[in-house]
Image (cartoon, rainbow, N blue to C red; front, side, top):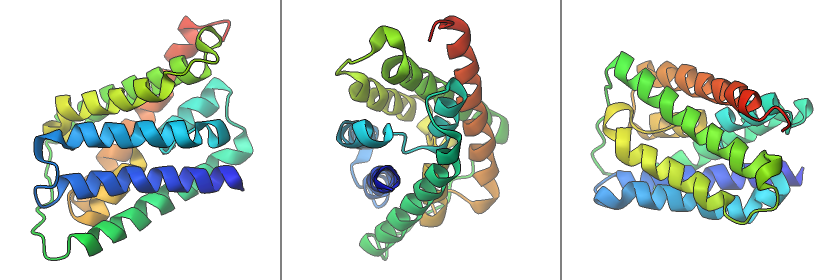
Length: 207
């Protein structure tokens, strides 16, 4: 039960940071830095308890890699989505009155952008937090947070830069993305996580 609570808390603060830094000017051009940092600190805070996924696509990749019990996959997804929804509700309270215009990304570029950087994120997670060659390292949280930051700077203006189905739900509830576009994130992000797991297993046959 503790690990489920940790996943909820970590996802909550990630999505809360997304909303607070993006809506109504927020952190302006530094928003990706704050978002990546929030993920980093939450991974360092809870990684030893839950693995610090905070992302259904990461959970899928870690499960496919063999480092997440099957019985935990659906509960992880549930608490991650709940944490995201709760954070979105708090952001809407904090930012009440702010004018929010839903993004309307072009489908193919957004699908590709989300796929590529979710792949990169899960690939980094698997190699820094689950591989035998990097076992016991102290840098995995920084590596993972920096990957999200990099993706947000690189393609945030193309797809919205979610790389996370939970974040996608959160930004949709906040009004930053249209409900009609949520399938783009779900398809691309889960596919990116799955492909990253397959590539990891190919290049790390010994684990």
